Length: 117
Length: 113
Image (cartoon, rainbow over all chains, first blue to last red; front, side):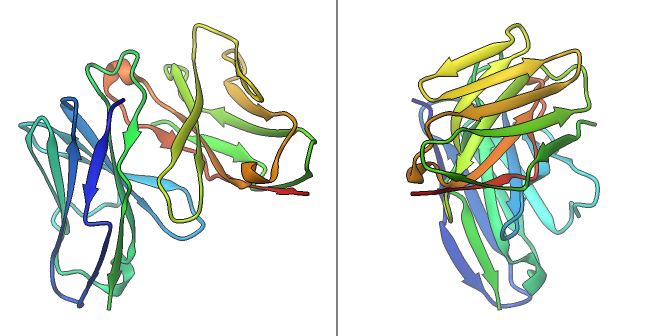
């Protein structure tokens, strides 16, 4: 079945530094990938839609200059948290949809737990 | 945009009982409604989904019903077991339009033996 690989699974960084999270579709091509953030005991909140070869579409309230998304190929999207602060600590999870999405469910990566100290 | 409401936020049942979780959605164009189960610290796992061209789908102890007119859908788990304990999320999207899944706030299901 379709596999989405996300790396790293955990990262601890100091305040002010930047962190890059990778999301790869291993056995399918994904023109669109989605980035979500999940705070403890809360739901998955859509941050942005990543489109291969074009700019990402950010949800209202998400700072595009802080959360940089690059979807350079059909199998890789990256999320960079720039100048991270403790309030950015969260579980970040990507997802991708094989093919055109007509009959394909969304597949999630394993998520990245970011802790900013 | 789409808005998904989910109830209840917590649900406690005895082993063997049934559990029902309900969701409503706002965008009448949404046509894909999956349900995810998420265990602590893990990614959501798809357990069942339904598309707008059917009203009900069943997979062993799990079933989902959809009422397009009322814009609500429900998850039914029968003969619950302790291992069913987790957080369940409903979601809605329009895959053909490439829209993302919008999730409900989740239901924490606890099954006690």
